[in-house]
Amino acid sequence: MLARFPDHEQEEAMGLALQATPNEVDLRNLPSTLRHKSVLRLARGLSVGTAFVFVTDRNPEPFYYQLQTQHRHEFFWNYLDSGPALWRVQIGRLQNPP
Image 1 (cartoon, helix red, strand yellow):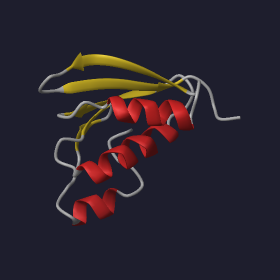
Image 2 (cartoon, one colour; image 1 turned 180 degrees about the vertical axis):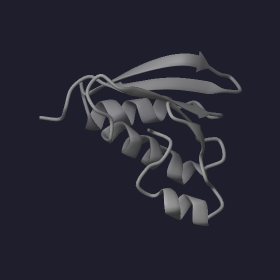
Image 3 (cartoon, one colour; image 1 turned 60 degrees about the vertical axis):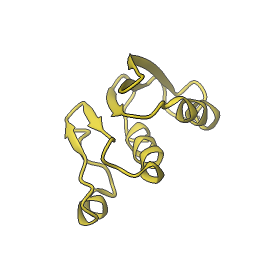
Image 4 (cartoon, helix red, strand yellow; image 1 turned 90 degrees about the vertical axis):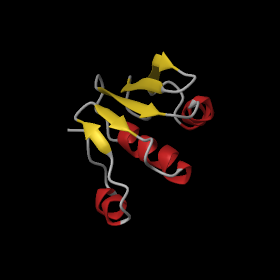
């Protein structure tokens, strides 16, 4: 299940628990400083061939470039909805890191 991530207890204690289903994570209630970190942790935890969707109210393009720079060819990125008020992005693992 992808609804929880390693810092879940910390987020919950801060009153920022993620609203999520097993394959979709809603980041809109998290401060922007935690969004990239949360998605990156979820992405790194994926097995090859699995994916999740994240929902945000801000254009996630900067995170796309960060992911491509740090993890080139490991993940795919698919826009399911592309703003202007809501973005839904599917991230999946293509291969394990070298």
